[in-house]
Structures are given as C-alpha cells and as structure tokens.
Length: 201
Image 1 (cartoon, helix red, strand yellow):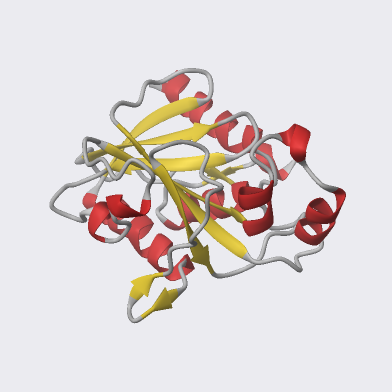
Image 2: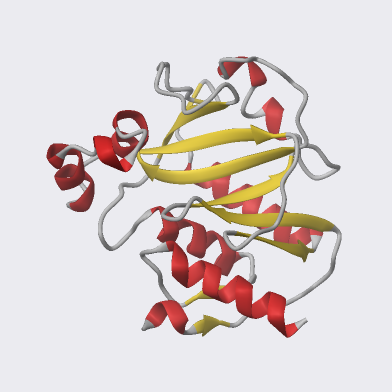
C-alpha cells in the first residue's frame, strides 16, 4: 500500500518542535502559537473562538470537507447526503483551527523537531490553502464549534475519496521534506511513518 511506502525526508535541524495529531480518523498539524517565524493568532484571531481566550501555547490546523466539519460533530450524526457530497468532491473545503495550552504525545500524537526552513514550508502550505477576503482568511460564522477554543475558515480545494483531510496533511509534510507516505487517505498511513520515525531514534 502507498500509505506504507515512505517518502524521502530530510532532518535539517531542530529549531522548532511540532506535533502530528489524530483523533482516530482525521489528522492535524500542531504548531507553536508564536515564534520568530510566525504568529498564528494574528492570522487566526482568538476573537473568532467562543471563549476568545488568549492563554494558549499551540495551534492545531486541519483541512477537510466543510460539510463534515460543520454538520457532523460526531460520526453518529453523519448524514448520507453529507458523505455523498464529500466523497464525490462536490463540496467545499474548510480549515478547523483549535488552540491548546498543552500537547502530550500518545499513540495518536507524535512530535518531531524541524528546521526553520521546514517550518516556513508548512506556513506557506497553510497560506496557499486558504481563501481570503481583503487579504484576510475568511472566518466561517457558525455555532458548530466543537468546543470553546476552535474556529473554522474557508479553504481552497475540495475533499474526495482521493484527496481527504489526511491527504492534505501528508502533502504538507512531504512538501516540507518531513516523514510522510507516498499517498494516504486515512490517518494510519501518517501515524505509521511517525511511529517508525520515533522508534528509529
């Protein structure tokens, strides 16, 4: 399977620690909220969350189908119409942004230290995947947040069975020359690469 075929990667430095996080289905990239490279809350304001709190250290970024994000808070609530639209690539995409105070490693969360160049590559990939209005990311006004510290933004592209949320994450990692698979649809292909990387150290 392509999800088990490793993409070549380079370890260029250890300036920044990031995390690859899954909820068991969907992967996010978790980044330091602020550093000398980028200040994420200037791009995704705290004011767009329900809590509007600013007491965080990390930002979690995930790309996916807008219908899934807004209409399906749990898999039990998945509608056939939502699944059909997403699977055929006819729906719109969105970013789900979540702020965290702490992140801890477990079987679904892995860390890796990366270089400034690789961090900038991730920043650029996120920027290129967003939609803008007046040079600012477009916040999706909704009450469908999963908690007090998350928000949604309009994204480019469309979700399909061939380009899932995990495909997007994997492509971002590949572009940054970080551990990744040739191609993935599910989270296990990405987690496999990071578990293998962790065990190789």
